[in-house]
Length: 208
Ligand SMILES: Cc1cc2nc3c(=O)[nH]c(=O)nc-3n(C[C@H](O)[C@H](O)[C@H](O)COP(=O)(O)O)c2cc1C
Image 1 (cartoon, rainbow, N blue to C red):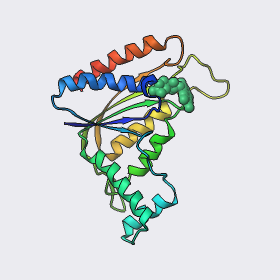
Image 2 (cartoon, rainbow, N blue to C red):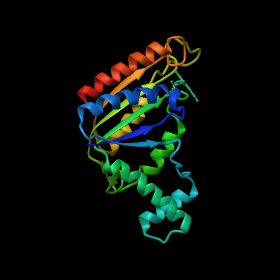
Image 3 (spheres, rainbow, N blue to C red):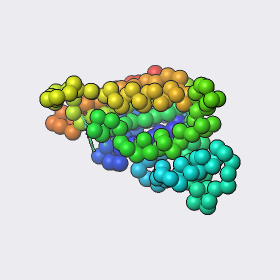
């Protein structure tokens, strides 16, 4: 069994989301003997920019036109990243909230790997998944909570993060998602909240 562990916080040992993911993995390794963990850290992976070059490579990839040397290098990196999703039996994602959404590097990864005939299919009429992954575990982590008021807009909570991430995981072919949320990771309650969240993640790993 192979789990793709996508690290989305750049904060290393100070990161609450990484600590929660690690607690999940520690328990999951006890359950699944020989578990292979493929850690994809989006902050150290040197993800190519998804600019004109990547888009050029994408269209040439589809039409079969010859690519420039650097377009080919970008396309190869895209294929390599996508292959890590293709090989995965499970996906693990722990996501910090950044400005009510998720860190921009995670969107960069999604824009790179979410290619037709790699992660999804499209026959001109209908989209379908290209992957067949039983389960994903997602932990959504944020510094505040609903306690912080808003003057002019209703508080969104985790809405903007969860809806998109869960849509995308189902879209590419993840069948079921186990999710948890964690709040107050940057105030006086942080240590207790993170400790509690690590226990919850470990408990969920036992049933995953
Ligand atoms: C750029 C940035 C934006 C953030 N935006 C929010 C936010 O909108 N709402 C919130 O509750 N916390 C916000 N936070 C706090 C983080 O969600 C919190 O510190 C979380 O624990 C970060 O995850 P990490 O510890 O794994 O890095 C933000 C933090 C950063 C660095």
